[in-house]
Image 1 (cartoon, one colour):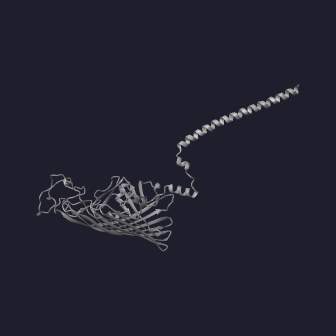
Image 2 (cartoon, helix red, strand yellow):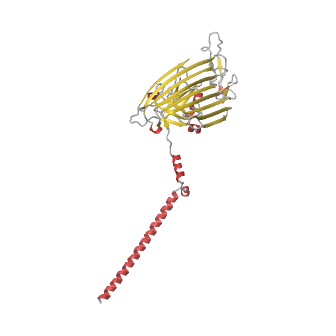
Length: 430
């Protein structure tokens, strides 16, 4: 009897285990189905938020992926705002830097046009001389003989006391640095508003030839040529030529009929680089510039205004009062039209050279920069602005400058960075 009871109990336990196993399996299937439905819905929602082109992209090859990453990374911009080569992001100075490629892509042909890409910079012009202003700080009289701008301009490490159009032409430019705020500690005199540094290309070890020609309205022709080549193992040279000739003026003289606001210039710059060893670097730069442009005076006086030559004409000259009707009332008016009867212009021609020597001394680096510049020119003015021959004259000017700078600075990577320097400038103007 006991054996029968034990056998029945065993069958009951087996039946109960099968029932529980089936319930667990069904529960798992139900839970799995519910989770799968939730997961499918979540994936569908995520898929709807994901751009379709990302789904269709193929995984790039390892080499292509590496090139793509390198192309999208920001390249380090090296500047010399603190008189040593540093990455732009490591310089504790407000600096805006532009590479030559960036300037060309932006259509910048002259440094004065940098105001189009840097709103804090502006250039005024007085009889062919450009006056930089940074953050509204500058010298309005900087174009006059004997005055200099409070924002100095350096081209290839040389300070230019006078800036004509040709000196500022963008050709073979490596980079332009705009330093904002007072820079008197490292740049000395006349830098209360900031400083501008231009650097042209140095000769390379590879041969390079490039050029361009352009034609624009007002019958404007322009061209550029750049050549660079090595000479042996330690020497290299380059040559840069640029010029512009605008033959049609923006306006006309209503009294004489000639064009006004025309311009032409030419500039040549060449470098010779000698690197006898890793510790010595010698660079000689020579340059020439010529510019001539009309100076059109825009005179839109109100009708009924009278001008007298009493204050500008020597005794004995006719001195009648002159009635000046508004130019706005003249048929065929043009904003750039003028009454000047004398063709005005500013002509300037100059040349010079710089010599830079970099020498490693072991404990420090020594830099010597020697510069010389000479220019002469003529400013022809019709100062009476009446259309009559009352006050005409030529202003001839001539200037020379010589500069010598020495820098002794700590080695790159030193725990304490320091720099010592001295600067000499001799400037004669007449």
